[in-house]
View 1 (cartoon, one colour):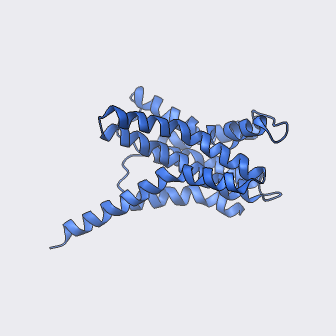
View 2 (cartoon, helix red, strand yellow):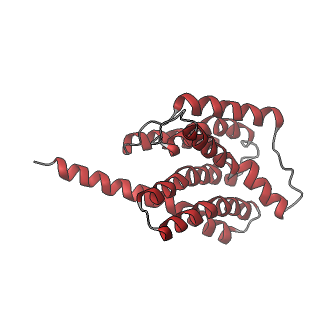
View 3 (spheres, one colour):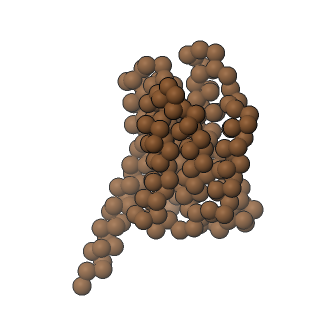
Length: 210
């Protein structure tokens, strides 16, 4: 399980690069910032100390474990785009996955004992769901100009981090039904992105046939 936590994020990043034309990923910014974030985790520890299985535990999952670790690189990438340090068409998901690679390596060691599956397997999946799903919703909103699509995408972007943190919280508290439902909801944008890339790939192969 520790190897899954260690390798899943970088392997999925490589999968995206080979599977889809994702463009520039801002590696010159993403990796150093990810290393700095990892050093902060190592030196200062988690920001929230949970006091049981309640809101404080959910907040701990949101801030320290599941959602904020993905929202931070998302915010950093958008800020760098606004400051024109990165091009406007940068691969936001690739930036997030690169940022997450160093903390995933650290967490694979920190969480290896007692080796709880929800930490070593579910959390990397939720990171991927947020790191790819939120940029996919942003791209979806940019692609269509209708206001209701923009509202739908915004609601999805707001709901994904909450659903992901709730999934972790439910699995941690031995509430598997809620955990799987929230995990499924979190993975929907990622699944749609993968299906879309498969369709695009088939169209490209068909177009290249004589």
